[in-house]
Image (tube, rainbow, N blue to C red; front, side, top):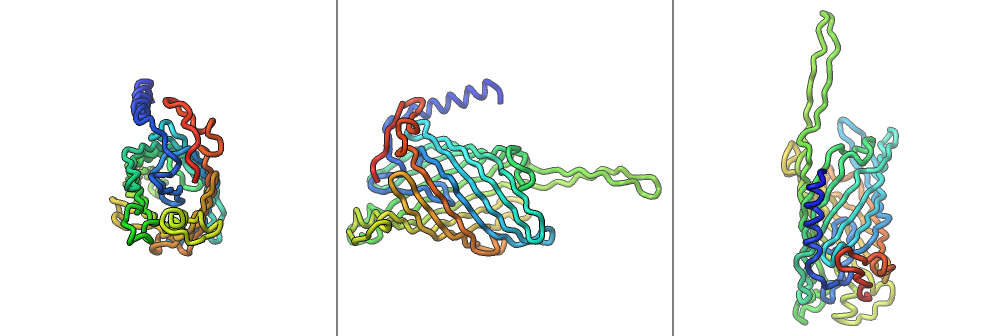
Length: 334
């Protein structure tokens, strides 16, 4: 990257960061608290740490390769640059355990992401944001299939609580939905494999063959359906739920991906993840099942879990500092 390009990017960040000086509570829009979900990125920007997030899933084999179990242990650090602009850094360690084969392990490519919240409505518990993530090619291990090229993914995020429903529909008001939509854009169109044939009996050979494999654009999309027991107890009706149930959010996540070119174009894979999230003052715990939507998405039901820290509440003087707005301070009690 040239100095000129770097200067332009920093200037854009500074311009966007200088907008909207008001601070907002972590994951809070109106009376609605939306948690950090495990499979689908939430629409908020915040000072937070997910460590660890773990996933265990078994995948079917093919003619070329046996079935294998994939274990991922990942982490992500997120930091607000302003009340509405956030930066995150993430990575994961992957273990591939094929049936009857040698186990391979290594780090996948590092991911860098920016997210900007451009619309909030506390009255209607609605939030919209946009972002872009960068899968940094060449930073991961080839042993586990990390690509050597970059992938850029522009994304849109949304969150909507149903607290604005009329009182006669009070039991539906704890419902909320969030979602994300993005497109993977590989910076390399094809992977090329060059082979040189051996000489034949007549002394001829050395023929060069080039095989090209398409790196397709992939649409990544998904949404969550949540029912907040804390919202039910606090803002609809006190049903007498004791701890820890009064801070639980049952949810279902739908995490999908669909190639839009190549031989698998239009063929969707993904998982449906029923689970539960418990949130406290400083931490959040989440556990979900991963149910494959078809044969290509997985062989058995997997498990997804996460320990999540609210850094903006743990040490606000340290983690809520921003370069353009100073210290934003702790968020509202939950």
